[in-house]
Image (cartoon, rainbow over all chains, first blue to last red; front, side, top):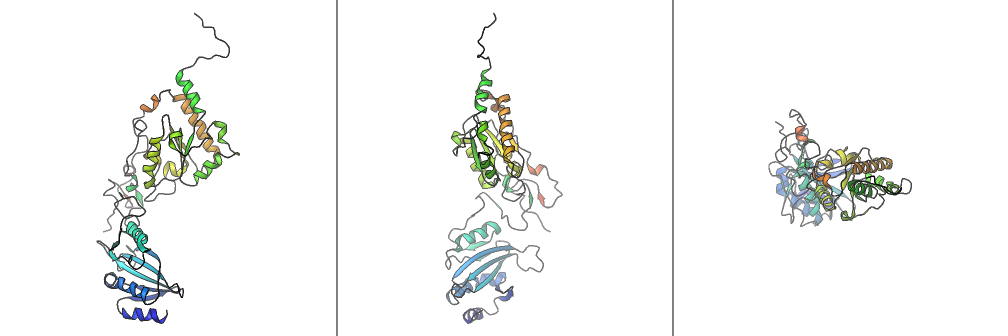
Length: 168
Length: 196
């Protein structure tokens, strides 16, 4: 981690938990910290520490996960295209109505990635310009990658009308 | 009065004549969504040559086709497309469900993949296999030809009798309510399970 990154992170001292996993640098924020500083932290990392590329946004559901404090995790994979350094910022959100700030204004490419997290996990991104389902049909009412979504059963996949031979 | 006919004249029914004409020129509509589509293509190749049975003219518009071959898994979003293509085909028309995924969902028992296209459109012939070999598809075409010859009518009367839904019963009626993973009931309320 270079000096600029460290100085940015120092500004948010106490608002995050740093850790390292397999040579990757992580910055973890709890649900309350995410609501408070996530957008500002990502903005500082982009503008002051040179993390100008948002590589990916991933969603996780920590329901029934051992020792998990918050239910939903949203991981922002940042890349510094100058140095090649990577930093993973892990935000959290909770039921009911898990909400995080949208980073669309920082990286326009986050548009579809946030839509996918919304589609699969139901995490709402505030100030997203066009937050609607991207993969599932619009009629779908639930979020299929949540851990309490049933693995088997009728499900919503069979909610469409059938055609008989005489009427088709 | 005995009818004296030449040797090259036959007496038949109009229904049988129409079916005989139709069955030997089934134009497939390839609704190929997955790997079964590759086997479908190889069925048309020179090695297997579905042209021997009159089904080589694959058309990519439903309006020119007689038989829809659904090859591959069909997801929720694709069902309205499939139904519309099926409805756009002109009578008489038939449907072959090719492969395990189209017939039953196959291994893809997920939130998006429908468990058999016969829940949404009527199917005439099922082809098992994952994917089926071209010989199996040719067998299905031959079976369909036999079905057309035995049941076909010139004005498609036999389809009017099929007013009942022919697919399997809804999955919710088949599962045990005690099974926690499986959620019976209507789809709007069944997608959540309580973890208390």
